[in-house]
Length: 93
Figure 1: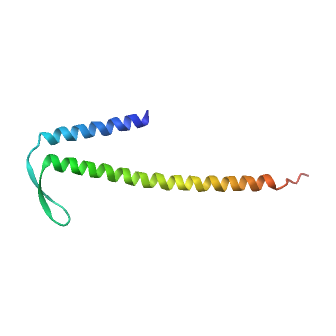
Figure 2: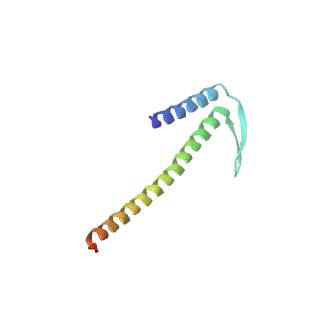
Figure 3: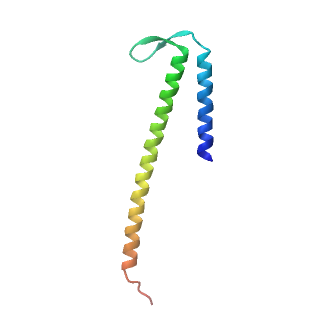
């Protein structure tokens, strides 16, 4: 359910940006790091939205991957410690 809500929010944002972009055919000058160019505002809006979306997914994916590796390492360590604990005899008084 959580993923469905996230997907719907992203879809609504995308639809709004496309709608606003199609109604704005103005040409604007966009200064980026190395040069500048003249773009239609709809093209610029769609490109920057897509780039931000992909960058956000990449960053979240890297954090998720780091978390999964850490979890796998902790699970291996836990299994090793449980095996050690099971093999050592318990001294009772």
